[in-house]
Amino acid sequence: MSLSGTWMQSVATGWLALQLSNSPFMVGLVSAAGLFPVLVLSLFGGVVADRYNKLRLVTIAQALLLVQAMTLWWFTASKELTIGWLLGLTTLNGLISAFEIPARQSFIVELVGREDLVDAIVLNSGGFNLARIVGPSIAALTIGTLGLQWCFAFNSLSYLAVLAGLFLIRLPPWVRSPDAQSSLDGIKGGFAYIRETPVVAVLIRVIGVYAIFGLPILAMMPVIARDVLRTNAAGYGFLLTCVGIGALAGALSLAWLGRQVRRGKLFIISSYIFAAALLLFCLLPWHVLAVSATILIIIGFAMLLNGSLANGLLQSIVPDELRGRVISAYILVYVGLAPIGSFIAGAAANAFGVLWAIGGGAIIMLLYGLWAFSKHPELRAV
Image 1: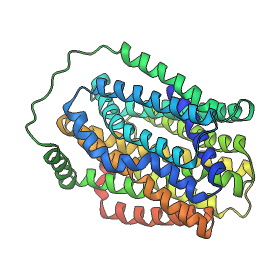
Image 2 (image 1 turned 60 degrees about the vertical axis):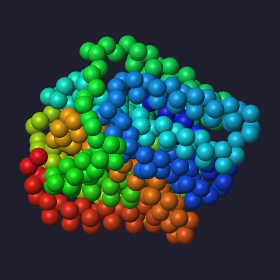
Image 3 (image 1 turned 90 degrees about the horizontal axis):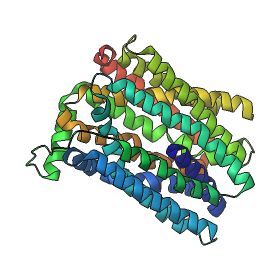
């Protein structure tokens, strides 16, 4: 329920940025504003997650996100919202997320144990992407009937569901692990582990490149909807729903496969499919909603496999005492580097068109994947 509200807010924010600025670059900038704090602070967030009660951290962060959504709703409903306020409130969301995401991701192992960790991460991604289907669909209906501001209002209410769920969790008393290191030394220790573990290093690097050049398609979706497919806010919500359908199918397929296939090999395959599908989307000789939506389903499928497999593989390898810091590094590259991609995609879309921006990124992804996977064949055996 809460993630559906989050996707409603995401749809409304992207469309509102386009309305307020009429600029693809500003759409990318608003998307980047929500992710840039993760780039700057997520490593420190990982240290905090390793040192403090993760359940308490997540609960506090979710309460703060509720306040942020209510503020955004008030500004929009009162007609006082400007592009500057939208940038500021979106940045605040990113600041909170820089601490919430590492704590929540590294908290999963405390709920399910290491044996079921990878499948739990996949099912968690399935819930996220089910919300990606439901949220944009409701957002499109809400925008058309009630107005943009009600997407933010419904998101505010949806946080009550996740807070209720968090208060119902019962765990053994939390015991702080002894750690005499400073925050900086803790971050250095995490980086040293990543650098000295080749499989972890290649996973992090590939995810970083794919985050910069692949994920911006989501930030550019309002521009694709309006300027390429000539559709409205409802069509924009439909396109995001298609990505969610593909991602949910990917999550369910991955959970069904279980341990029947080598997940390192599957990660490599999904990386190639992700890049190829993005390139195909941009090279279509004609752009109609039905054909584009079909390819977006494939993109969502491959995007989910790529991100979830990397997360699951990392968490199955990393020792518990370094989990928060390594996962924060994953979040740094997967979420935190996306602002760089949004900046690049927004600027390239302004200069050359949105399809050239996305297609150029897809070529870089494909070439880097070919180089990285040929240099690190050991990934196939994980």
